[in-house]
Structure formats: C-alpha cells, structure tokens
Length: 147
Image (cartoon, rainbow, N blue to C red; front, top):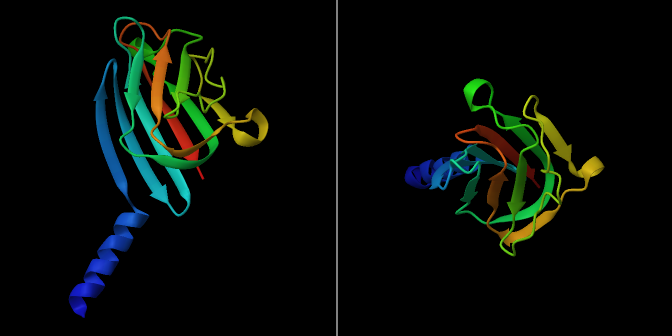
C-alpha cells in the first residue's frame, strides 16, 4: 500500500512540475515545456546562425489554443537585428502565430494575445520555430502559452 502511494505522489508531482528540456541545431534552440493544470508553456531559447536564422522542432505534440506569445530579444552583443521575424509552424506547415511574429522590435519585449491579436490553434501537432532576419549569432526567446 505504501509503495503505491509513493508512486502516485511521485507521478502527481511530475505532472504538476513537469519540466522537459530538449536541444536542437541549425542556429540553435533549446525547447522547454512546463505544464501546470490545463496551461502549457513552451519556450524556445534561440541563437541564430551566420545567415541570421534559427529553427527548432519540438519532440512533443500539442493541442490547444495559443493564448499568448512573448518575444524577448537578447540585449548587448547578441541583440537581434531590428524587425526580425518569427514563425511557429504546426505539423501542416501553417504559422499558428498568424503573422504576429513579423517585424519584431529588437529593443523591447513584444507580447501578443489571442483576444486582441487573433492567434491560432494546434491539434496533435509538433511546433517548429523559425527565426529569420536576426543577424549573425543573435538570440532571444519565444514563449508560447497554450490552453
């Protein structure tokens, strides 16, 4: 009986504080996922290659509406070129940001939400980050909240 209770508690803690980290290449990006209740937070921490691009595909599949997306440019020597672009494509190749990642500021955090900006949804889909026009060896984060 005690053994089963410990397993149940362990599983519940994993579900509550589940943090999974994945690494990818081409430019480079680290994908982090945190799930708390029905909200999923997916974070792409990216660094561009010599062509000013970075991409990464999650190994997890997601279902839900994109509620909010936050674009955080690096500062200093790794600050991206102004008006850089980000897409998040689903498994069908469609941008779930619905062009809300175009021409982003390199000087400030930019937030978009589903209520005012009209973000998309995904169903049983991996997410693929695509960053372009960022400059050589530049970086930032893209944080997505799904429900």
